[in-house]
Length: 135
Image (cartoon, rainbow, N blue to C red):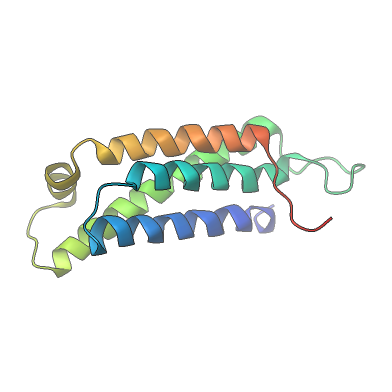
């Protein structure tokens, strides 16, 4: 089952990296909500493969409801990792605030909004998916 969720984990990692690059390195807020939504949808769509039979005969690895919960959890974890990465980058540049103080003073409600959007998009993707490559 863990191997089946690797594509979703890859999408989560890619989303976190892009959020850190845009939010910390480029110091931009524009686009963060869109990145969170697209990343959440990708996580959900890729995770949904676990909820379908691999060959049409064997049972699915997990019921759809558990896959939706897993995708939402992974999306929320992605936003948390991206926020901590953004804070860590700010610390490298000489910041002295704690993570919550820094994130709220720089981004305000963006981080909670990212979490909500990513979670909704992941739930949609896990319910609507899966995305499969190949045949």
